[in-house]
Length: 398
Image 1 (tube, one colour):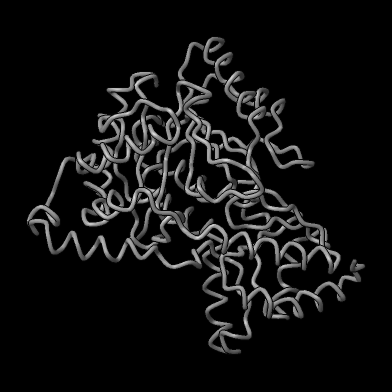
Image 2: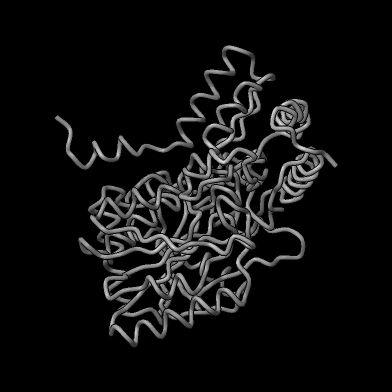
């Protein structure tokens, strides 16, 4: 018989993944060209050509025993140093290989950080709406999720609510900007406000509170927004990153964690994360992809592609009468449901072969998330379906 913990996990299994599976079934039934699946954040741009070329080069030139063998739990030292120097050049930091731990994607990174810092009963704060798997990651270590409400005018965190909900049990705060699901990029004023509150609360409770910056969408920003790196705001910041979006490599499960020297107990924290990497069974991040990531550290996905999709989808939906937040980053559009029950709205959308994700999957009802990391043709062909949906809800187009 399975454990009680996994029974709970099964009951709360990912809505997004379930809808992705349903979309695949609909595609078999109606034809893929007649189903408009906006459920999953699966990159639509191919990996840069340099990725393929670097794989060939590495396999041709390096010792196969080195490429495919074990290494330090943190990963190859040469890879970590290259990442550290890249961050230093881009963001004015002062890292070296010791501060970098290679991870099995961003999810693996969050789990090894949680393993290193959390005790049962500790609290992990999240800013709603948020990526629902954070709940599962915290539950892995018997920690409690505490949700902070947003300012619904901007969908940045409500700082008064944030401050009020911090307790002596608060061990970590997860921040995700550019944000999944809203596409919002948190402004400098907000980030400084979060940092100041955390500094005050650490003094008040005589505790360490880690700000964990989950940054898989760091490079996907639009409209003059700049790539940001949050260690400059708050000393107890840990950064988690994935190459899934920046290099379009989600299935390769490669990322890293950064622990600055300024973080509390940084040496012990780094050692603990390394032990967690081993004891959780990862042992080390995928060896070949570590070397590929280092070779392709200057490469980026085609941000212009997502920008064009963003503009097309946002303008089309607004013209049909839907109310949307214009994304500033990532590749998601956050749209207000015209039905007070957004789950019912999502079901209605399926009649027109539109696969959307309800806001309740992100702990904020009344909205839906639309992932525009699809082909331009998918968006273009979906507009008549959205038009029928708008007509059903008697929306007034522009």
